[in-house]
Length: 355
Image 1 (cartoon, rainbow, N blue to C red):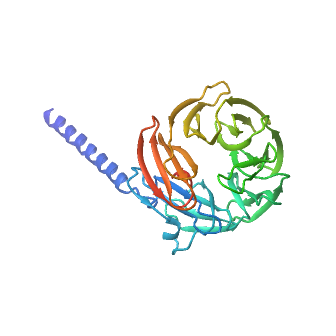
Image 2 (image 1 turned 120 degrees about the horizontal axis):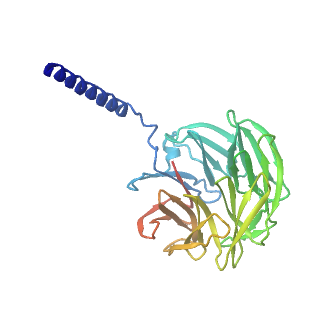
Image 3 (image 1 turned 90 degrees about the vertical axis):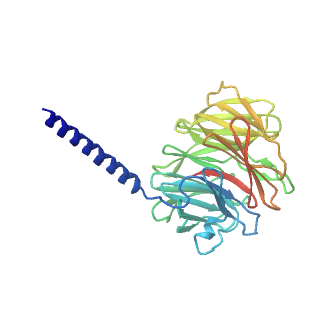
């Protein structure tokens, strides 16, 4: 009896050891996807006609900033002129380079280039089904969304609009495009000037315009994000800000007013909306029309012309001040407004992306 119990105990111990070894093997056999797995990608716009566009990588612990990672991993090839935005689809990152009239496709973890396709005066990018949608706008005569095959990047269709095509997001199988348009002052701080006030939806099943939705304020669209099955649109004038929760399929919306605040850089994080006022105050707001905004803290600029980049990543607030005449300043805060880190990066840091 004692021998049987001993043998049983030895078998159990052996099984436990074997299982532990297999678990260790599983952990040991996890292969990193690349040097930039995790962490944050920093979009660097660069000055117009100066070929200064680049992407930097900030490690998750904020200890290491690697600059110009596109050139570093592609035989020192420059990225181009004016990096407008970065978007992700599966393991690919799409780098929209506005004034170089192209989109560079790279492995998001190694930043090795896998493809390039033409997109004239590209502004924004979104995905639905087997299609890539790129908004193009030259501020004179080209106001369109170009549709590409997501596998080959061959052009599929062009949708033209009467007014500027700017920000673009996907909500399920609907593509939502800012078509209110704007032009810009020719001197600093280059404020936007409205030229209409609509957003347009595209049915990705047919790649046709579905609905045109007219917003009810007189401001300029300063932000648009996707979340919770809606498109959230921010419009601001010199006094107030308006936030719309848009149902793209129904073509309906609810709206709320943030009185006395001129805001921009709308973001969706953790089922809440976040934005920053022109005075540097950072706000959060629930998505329902009746939710009252909460002021989290105030960012006080110490350099640069104005706040340009803004995002919320892993309970930290990322803000960039730029002036396009030198390096940008990056400020990283806790959600309570404690300054965690300051960094300098390239000219015109315009966005932050969790990788």
